[in-house]
Amino acid sequence: MPETITETKAPMIEAEGLVKIYKTKELEVLALQGLDLEVQEGEFTALIGNSGSGKSTFLNMIGGLDRPSAGKLVVGGRNLFTMNEKELVDYKRDVVGFVWQNNARNLFPYLTSLENIMLPMDLIGAKQKRERALELLEMVGMSAHKNDKLTTMSGGEQQRIAIAIALANKPKLLLADEPTGSVDFATADLIFDIFTELNKNGQTILVVTHDIALSKKVKRVVAIRDGKISSERILRESYADRLKESSVDWRNEDTQEEYVVMDKAGRVQIPGDMLDRMNLKDNKLVVEYADGHVILKAPEERIPEGDT
Image (cartoon, rainbow, N blue to C red; front, side, top):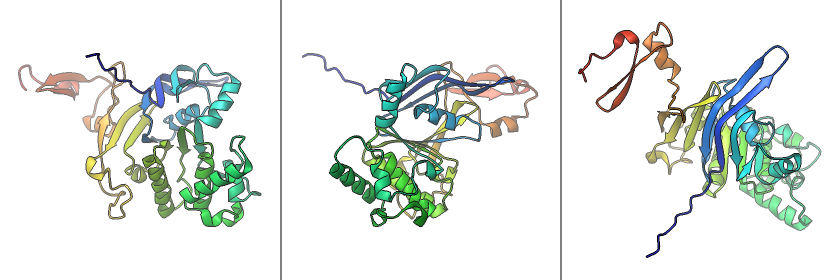
């Protein structure tokens, strides 16, 4: 019998050794320091990290709003290092949709919700645009506000319209930068529930969030520290089918397993709180292998030979 060849899909996002340097006359800032990350088609992934960690820089690069300094970045099969300006415009229109924390970047205040959603659509007929816009309003639960303008809507309602706008051209990848940063807890939960529903229907989503509690509802959470991926949290199987259940206290329950991430050079970032507890005198550690475990010790705590 002939051998069956299994075709493997390329990742939606493939970043390898990604570097971003911002230069001024006085100094250089290394925002990304060899970041490696793959996001598969159909994943809902959250990026978390402290201010200045590089998460928004990375999101802007994926969105085609900033250029990498070095490394590899391929999104939706398109190489962001080799694109010319026309290709970049096509990429931002066809491949990615962007939701901002400041929804004024998505919305025109003098247009209705329906008109705002129709505005960025490709050159299709007016009837098709209207049908698509109405479908998106229904999707984000805003059908009753189709003729409302920005000034008559709450911040949460505006953000739901902004999500619909980002989806107008059926992007392969939906990006969201702190989409719940300026709304209350209940509205933030609702926005994440919309993302969850979109993801169930096949939409690939990458969201930057500072809200650790909300990130507990996401199947994969990637933490960035000092311009590199430091750890990942993966949703436990027991919670995978309960993402929209009101009975789950997402703010207090331990819903995910956490892992440190090893890069291609075999390096890991040790969580800062663990390093603090080790009371290191300098930046040196002893590495031991015992009983199938890799153990990191302060130099004076070396495991005696043969003691496992």
